[in-house]
Length: 357
Ligand SMILES: *[C@@H]1O[C@H](CO)[C@@H](O)[C@H](O)[C@H]1NC(C)=O
Ligand SMILES: *[C@@H]1O[C@H](CO)[C@@H](O)[C@H](O)[C@H]1NC(C)=O
Ligand SMILES: *[C@@H]1O[C@H](CO)[C@@H](O)[C@H](O)[C@H]1NC(C)=O
Ligand SMILES: *[C@@H]1O[C@H](CO)[C@@H](O)[C@H](O)[C@H]1NC(C)=O
Ligand SMILES: *[C@@H]1O[C@H](CO)[C@@H](O)[C@H](O)[C@H]1NC(C)=O
Ligand SMILES: *[C@@H]1O[C@H](CO)[C@@H](O)[C@H](O)[C@H]1NC(C)=O
Image (cartoon, rainbow, N blue to C red; front, top):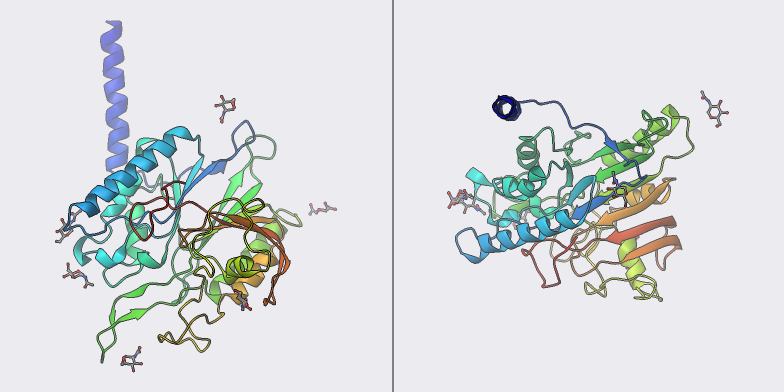
């Protein structure tokens, strides 16, 4: 009797949780919390670049290899959150009718472990056949697991701009002790838009928009006031680094492997926000760097409590640089925030550096 009753109960539980999944328990994921050990671990994947050359065998095989990297890392670590820091898909190769189907393959290793994730979108996530809005909608097929949001709705804001509070495990458990900021550095090309005369795809600016900077500063001020704090410790994620990272690399001391460990192969001048644009907002072949990321850099450098900014994009760089003071040629003064690159995680995209997280 005992085992049969147990089996029946178990089948009932499995069925009801299965039904909940299938028929929409659409409540958001539970709040993020530090562990009882006082830790909060984040695994940051970036430049996954799924979906290259679906019509060849090497493209799909590359994605299978990337899933293996994800599985190995997720098993080795004890993360409370996974961040997908841009270029999830190589949108140039996407078909209009199923452009976001690769999201299912990306999130499967996370769903299998009951993990939740938060994305920023990169330049390859906006292409003629692929839109950021479509990726967000696809992620939200798993509303209990996807934490990606759009909190700024202007026409030039991009999509993946939002913050996530992280709460302590004990003590005042209703007050965030860490904020995670996610910014959309845009780039790539506008969805289904062509130049009427030339037929060319239309480029999307590749920096964090002023409207997002304004939202960031106002929201951070509101939160610190709400909790009566002079600052709240925070981390930021954005796919394309700012010019400050290039200025660090170009500074006389440069990136020193003893003080800034990691590879520095996208050198001497790494690709930064506003690359390929002119100051007047045009993006002809003569444009190198338009400087439109200056407001975002100023906001990062003046946000108290911001400990580090994590970027991808430059897949040949994995160092962190503590931005303190004025870097050669720059006006914006760093306040000690760490500018970090992660390890590129996908087999797609340029370069053959080891995949990792
Ligand atoms: C806390 O740390 C111990 C020892 O390292 C580990 O076994 C345990 O899994 C950790 N707990 C959490 C919730 O991370
Ligand atoms: C976009 O999708 C359409 C429909 O699948 C396809 O014919 C086309 O080659 C794709 N790529 C571009 C750049 O238009
Ligand atoms: C996406 O659509 C293309 C063209 O219709 C097709 O060849 C391809 O197999 C589809 N990809 C997936 C993963 O379903
Ligand atoms: C469209 O292309 C033409 C010819 O290359 C160019 O002169 C024009 O500025 C383009 N228009 C837009 C809106 O990009
Ligand atoms: C805010 O914090 C300050 C300094 O810690 C304290 O003096 C003040 O009473 C607090 N205000 C409120 C409304 O809790
Ligand atoms: C961008 O960085 C370069 C160093 O690579 C520096 O010379 C230039 O002044 C910087 N510009 C801005 C607007 O930060």
